[in-house]
Length: 243
Figure (tube, one colour):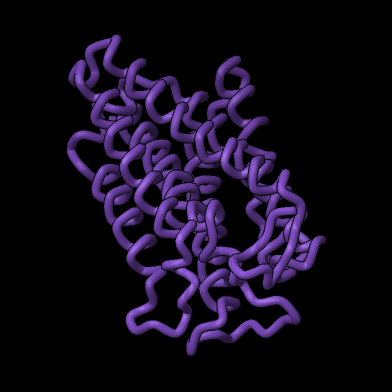
């Protein structure tokens, strides 16, 4: 069985495995995207190594700290979770809004950026199964107030339509991206408000403590920022195509 530090909550070990596989798949996708952009000369040839080294270092460091229980102290001031969340979001936002971003999206087909968002279906299944086993608040799932699965499902359909050229509405895609950003922000806020901190406002039989453990610490420290970055890159791609 998998479970939180100290055996407070228990859930099947396959959920740990599934989440690790998902996080590593996103890591691989990021490195592969950098390689593709480098092949067409959109980014420096060393870019894939930079991506692999930076993301790999971050995953290893946060993973080791989470495995040791560092992020389980929800009473610390400032919250230790910020040490994992803030740098990741800052890095993704800095990259997404940098002058380097147009070069990245120039080397990537738009349908690939859209398709990458379909990983959120798998993520939502994992969160729902954690809830089903009593390790996650209901509010964090599609049975509660997490609508992220809608973005994941629609991402696949949009990617197929965009690739085949049968539908390419820039207005609708912009709205879709901003809806995805809004849903991510809602999910993040619910995750924070359901954690057992002094700021907790969502009270359910199970608090959101699993988010401080390995491997699920990677959700706010890597997976969610990655989804934000994909939305930003999609919007930058749209902007580049209309200028």
